Amino acid sequence: MASSKSMRYSSRSSKSSSKSSSVIWVVVGLLVVAILILIFMSNYKFFEKFTNPQPELQYFYMPECGYCKEFSSTWDEISKEVSTNPDNYKFTTKKYDIKDNGEGAALATTLNITGVPTLSLVMADGKTRHSFDLYRTKENVLKFAAEKVNSK
Image (cartoon, rainbow, N blue to C red; front, side, top):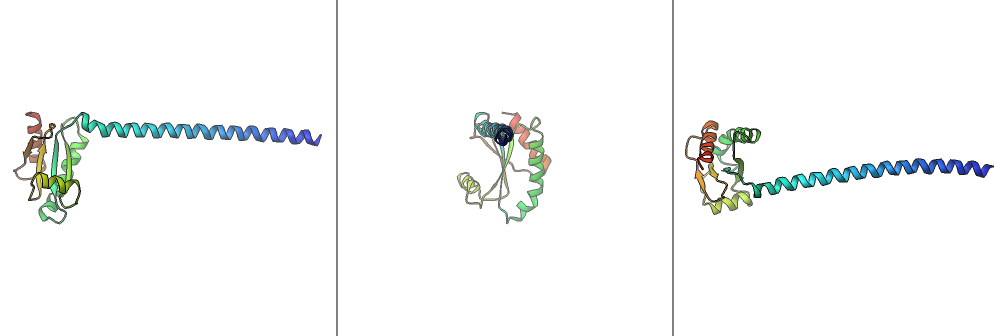
């Protein structure tokens, strides 16, 4: 009889461990699905840049430049305005450090940018550039970019 009781107990513990492992597998499966969704969405956003290019308002600067430091808060306002209102602005913004020994420096060299701060708008074709030459206020910069984008 003692042996039949121990068999009953062992059968119960295997049922509960079976339920536990099933729950663990369900959780693992859900995590895998969530990770795959995140990967798909990030890849979609990455490739969207190439399949649906938009004009880009570019800001070239150097961290130690006094004028750049002065303009920095204005640029942050411009970037925030554009990114939070994509229906109003049909362009993106990007800031390039021309001393970073990376993308900013390479692009500044290619475009022969010798002074900072420099603002330019690159149209969706990637070839047409418009230089900004007015007083650097948020209103002037946004108006300049919107007019150029809308006059394509």
